[in-house]
Length: 82
Image (cartoon, rainbow, N blue to C red; front, side, top):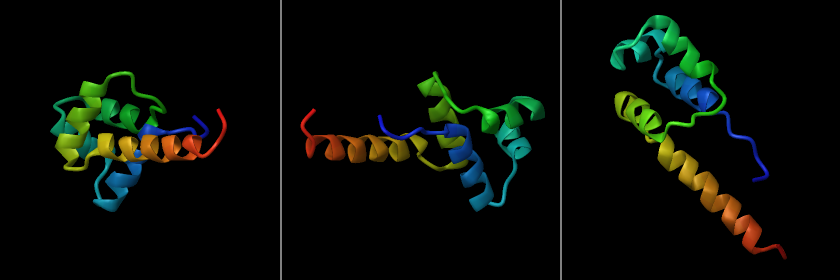
């Protein structure tokens, strides 16, 4: 993959768009405020189900965003001799 994906930054960007903060997200996920801040500081997520929970809580499909990135990457690769 040619690009680095910072999922925590994606979540922070969506929080900003919604004019929310990590503490609000933590409350939705029934976790501590400090865990809310840890979520947005994470660069990688190894737990797809957790990312799904974040997507549902925030009403924003981060998995769809990632799928679009995968599609873009695959279309770029198909034009190259790999």
